[in-house]
Length: 120
View: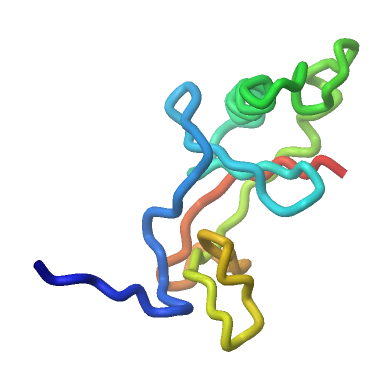
């Protein structure tokens, strides 16, 4: 049986996410409560998936506030492009991370569309 070695810094075309809600793969992104959804989605659809993900870890919603309204969060949602790579410890990446994301454009090779929620 052959083993596959994953090269540090290698491009990832199917990044691991925390869960999928309403057909949208989502994950917490960074250390400030930001979230990432694979693909470009409307703000309301992305917010529904983000809220569901927040509830899965015991929060009331993305704000953990029962008084929060969807309209308060729609402007915090944006679409962009990222290239996902394996951690490269030789470049200072934490080897315990599953992947790293590098900002990109639609024209960047291997770039993937993502929808972000900026919590701060």
